[in-house]
Amino acid sequence: MLKTHWTRWFSEIGVQDVPVVGGKNASLGEMTRELSSLGVSVPEGYAVIADAYRYFLEANELEAPIREAMAELDKDDVEDLRRTSRLIQNSVIGAGFPEDLETEILRCYRELSALYAEDLTDVAVRSSATAEDLPTASFAGQQESFLNVHGDAQLLESVKKCFASLFTPRAISYREDMGFDHFQVALSVGVQKMVRSDLASSGVIFTLDTESGFPDVVFVTSTWGLGENIVQGRVVPDGFYVHKPTLGQGYAPLIRKRIGTKEFKLVYDTTGHRLVENVPTSEVERERFSASEEDVLRLARWAVAIEDHYSEKRGTKTFMDIEWAKDGLTGDLFIVQARPETVHGGGKAPTLRMHRLKERGRVLAAGLAVGNAVATGPARVLKDPARSRASAEARCS
Image (tube, rainbow, N blue to C red; front, side):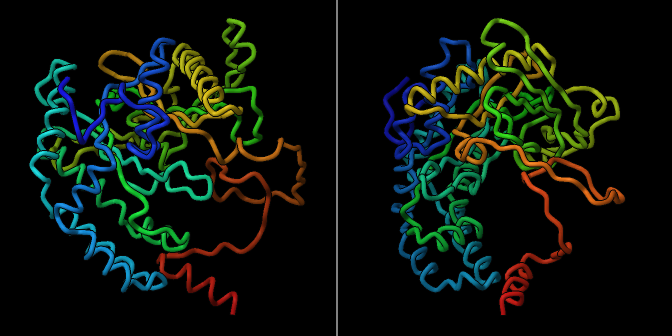
């Protein structure tokens, strides 16, 4: 591989490189370098580094107009926020790549394609912010990702859209509320070989029980198709619990499994109008588990290896939030992302609380719980996001 200036292969980076390639890409590099010897498989790829984003803005003289737009923003005015976001994003997407940056991005794409014996392979293009791991703020999940990107034009357009996604209304509002300078956060972009889980299944793994915080299980979720449906909470996935201590003794301790509704699956769009599309699952797919017990146990072993590695690296017990995918063409399993789990694993030791319902009513909705307590009160239906702030102000006045 030729020497590069604006890109880094995953095999060249690790967790120490968050300022250079962002949290997401740094983690992919760490697993590629340190865990492949343990059998953990990560699709090949490379990072367009954060300095390339800064170079792109500088070459197109975008920083001054972006700062001017930010200075005039009324962050409490939802429509002004949307208008400012749209103006900045259009400016970024409409700008051109410096020739040397474009050449390097495409040269690495050619090398990645050659690794898979393809002329123009399909890739996932994901944003990786340099501030994702700050202890006082959470920037993760605010930027865009693009799946089934194919060819030079789509790749370059997707990279620019990732750059532009630093200025979505949500991202702008968060930085304003947290008091961060909008240029304190930079963006790296990961270009990674797609796993054809649209022809199989994918999901998320937690190395603890997300409901109770119990540390001795691996919780594997799975659904048909690409994994964005689980990440975005669009479907109720299948769930599997594996007992860690017994797994470490060489047994196959799948202690519980539950079937999810899996109403939709995200697949490649074959019409050419979009990159991917959500389609309804069949009755047979909804009634079947989307992952085999063999695959679940292998994923659980990988998850424990990843947890052990990050715990040793950080010098403290570190529970992990891991994304996985199965390739429907080869049958191979892959890890496509891993990050420290901060919602459930960073708090106090779990305690048991009992709640008793006074009466039973008619079930109005069913799904996965996102809280760990019981509450009552009137339901407030907001048909327009702008009403949320107005409603809060009215209640406080």
